[in-house]
Image (cartoon, rainbow, N blue to C red; front, top):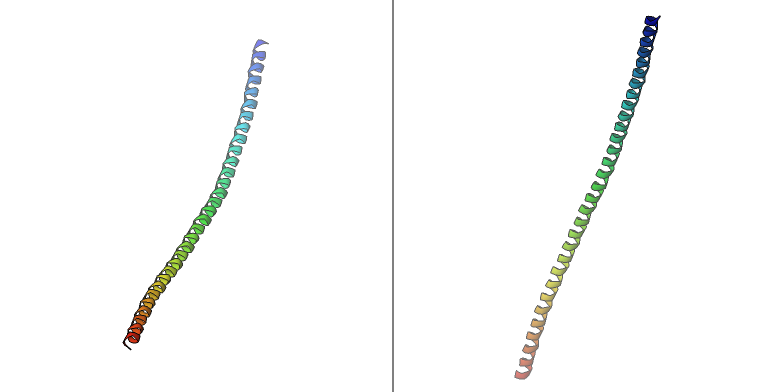
Length: 113
């Protein structure tokens, strides 16, 4: 009968909708799982890159600090050498003045003598 055919058609449409809804739900769960997995992977990768970046920055900053300390040490050494050189020049000048004074004294003594 017509009513039975209509009922069967409605029943088939309901079954098709249920099948489509189930496929839709399964696809949605698969997409959500993939997005979650990608999010976890992204966070892991981000953590790894962050750790590497911190290591690089730490190494660079540590290297710069060590380089600056070495440079300051070298400058302090050069300053000490410059001060020693200046002390030697002053001593040499004083010695030359003393030697010139003694030579002048000797010349006077010879001249008086």
